Amino acid sequence: MPEKFDVIVVGAGPAGTSCAYTCAKNGLKVLLIERGEFPGAKNVMGGILYRKQMEEIIPEFWKEAPLERPVVEQRFWFLDKESMVTTSYKALEWGKEPFNNFTVLRAKFDKWFASKAVEQGAVLINETVVLECIVDDGKVVGVRTDRPDGDVYADVVVLADGVNSLLAKSLGFHKEWKPEEVALTVMEVMKLPKKVINERFNVNDDQGVSVEIFGDSTKGALGTAFLYTNKDSLNIGVGTTLSGMIKKKMKPYELLEYVKEHPMIKPYIEGAETEEYLAHLIPEGGYNSVPKLVGDGVIVTGDAAQLVNAIHREGSNMAMTSGRLAAETIMRAKETEDYSERTLDYYRTAIYDSFIGKDLKKYKDATHVFEEHPQYFEQYIPLMNRAMGTFFTVDGTPKREKQSKIIKSFTGKNGRLGVAKDLYRAWRVVK
Image 1 (cartoon, one colour):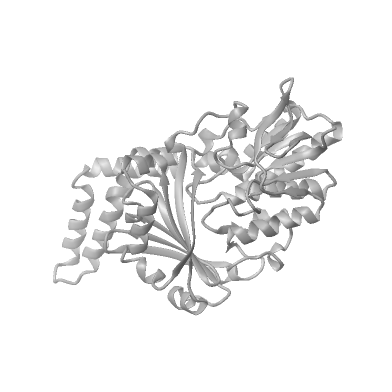
Image 2: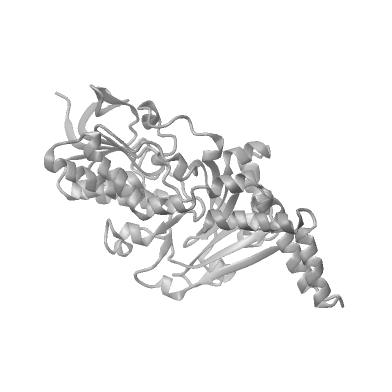
């Protein structure tokens, strides 16, 4: 007789492990399946972990988790070819408990997080591929793996198998994602001495910086590059929507090399040696792309459910919360031994009532609008750079004349009405 669990979780990323940890901690019999050699071996993100959502699962996790640096400064760079306009916010309180967010290396963090789920009683098996969900009379009752005699059964199967989620697709929960619904991100972890990082970013050993980079870093395509400080390494990467990559005929590794060679960025990574190269699809379809989230005996979480806020670059925090909410839903269902879609629908309601649903709804049109109107990245960021250059260059021209010239440069091509429309359109999708 095949073994039966209360819960099978497919995927040991932030969503899957959060669900497995919470279920196991509350006494459920949990199987956590990871296709990689170990949790974190196959996972990719820029490297920012938010404290609030993680602490709701493991209080004061920062006292033992393998973190890099607490982020004390958030910088934004708007690049042109040989200039940039910058803005930032720095808060020393973010460097103290309870902190705001941290830089992390996923290979270390995910491994530790999964070990905490195992400590609670979850069974973790690595290097195992789930081939399909086992469906009986319309209800998901288990999974078929690539192991000999690899069928395992459970009351609920939680799909946390990442952006492609072939399992959710095979159940008819979503179709193939369109190129504008996913972003292709490439990144490198680059080794650099701690002392050099501290000097270049003006921080101490226990302070980190995150930099989000717009404009020329993606050659005007919708997307961003990023640069994050770890203890003795940097995470540098860039991502654009797959449709943008196709439209501009860009190759991801060439775009990353372009970013690394950019004269505004190169000085920060000078002398660093590449330790790791990663590439991954990120779900960025937002609110309108969220698939069916529950069925009889099955729940979809994290990237598999398109739970990413592309505007604020948030994904792991939404994944963790979705995993926790899935676990809480399963525990409610356990009380009545009813794992039907009607009962599990509590999860869908909880997602849309939480910050996840509200934030995704707030920005539901943003990605599509910026994709359809490339002037925000292609025209306005270079114009902003030239305007600043014009205004701060002392050449004997009266400041009023400079102001007039700057206004004309913004309205020259699109007209005042066109610029006003662009500003109003942007305000509407982010308000």
